[in-house]
Length: 212
Picture 1 (cartoon, one colour):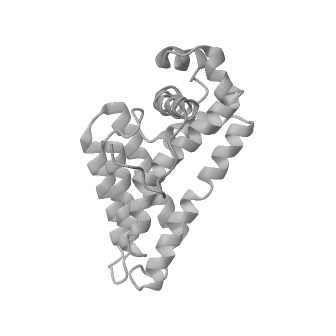
Picture 2 (picture 1 turned 135 degrees about the vertical axis):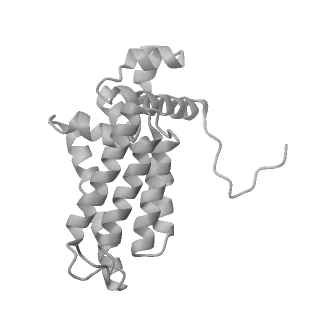
């Protein structure tokens, strides 16, 4: 075995590895059953640990839910946000976001489809700390896409008269519907329809395009 580099991250303790394994399973289960449908007993049985042992890592179900959402967010950032932010500002970045998102859904990164689309459906009518966390996370989505649209306008790629927030809303709506229908019907064609729909509104917004 080669020696560890001095700058290598420290090895995880057994407790840290168990904690990470619990979260990995929790994300998988919650993507299908929801963070409220995910039970401590279900996780404990799947992992071969006791309920008390599992609780020792989190202290409460709410903390488990929070850390599950945070773990899922890290995956989403890696799969969707990193490729998006690596692309040049403007239309290229919006197109990178779309391709990264549709690929992430198509590859079943989460077995229940986009984790956060499911989370929105689960939490929208609820109240409480988890609902508030979801509001915080979701609150930046449309504004974030709108910022990409504005960047495209500054670069002369998107017509100046386009309502950036409206275009962001439409693009995001196509992403979400394609995800829900792909999970429900397991038909790859719905993802292609989502790609075409989003590309269509983006093309119509390009500077120099002829409005209908």
